[in-house]
Amino acid sequence: QVQLVESGGGVVQPGRSLRLSCAASGFTFSSYGMHWVRQAPGKGLEWVAVIWYDGSNKYYADSVKGRFTISRDNSKNTLYLQMNSLRVEDTAVYYCAREAQIYGDRDAFDIWGQGTMVTVSS
Amino acid sequence: DIQMTQSPSTLSASVGDRVTITCRASHSISSWLAWYQQKPGKAPKLLIYKASSLESGVPSRFSGSGSGTEFTLTISSLQPDDFATYYCQQYSSYSQTFGQGTKVEIK
Image (cartoon, rainbow over all chains, first blue to last red; front, side, top):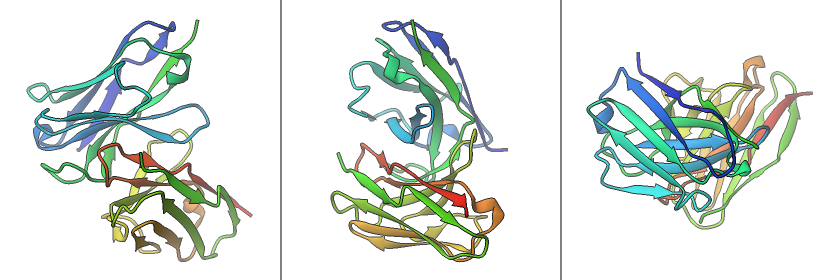
């Protein structure tokens, strides 16, 4: 079945780095734009980053620009989020999500992973 | 960035009630708006896309309307499974944004 599974979360000290992964299955991963969305404990959803289906374009929220990098390996059906210079305010559940239309540049998110928790604390 | 403002933040309602949630955009987003439902500890679920299109498998009691800067999500007859938090999302710009959420509670 169509599925996204995140991994790589954990507890990390401020200023350190972490890389999240999102493994896709059940669909043609290389045809879809992919996003990262996060949710701080008890708070709302915050969009983090997008990468186009072919990796040709990437966009970031201002809050993570210059610190986070989104990437993908279509041969491995995997999405990544490299998080550097982590801050306490980056503490959140991180979800990967798929755009609903193939080869689109903007669309709603029809498939979400279960999320992976990142805690930034000294 | 385009700001999305939802109202109310919390809504108390009973089973069978008609419920309406509003979402306002700081700039026109045409119809590039989605609605999601989220339950505690779970990922969001897509309900409505392109302002008024119902996602496959979503009950017909959910409907969306609006364009430009003002949008609504309506639940025609609230069911026990509908008590959750609802978010709007604009995808007009590459830097997408969500509303702050509306929690629908049992009255």
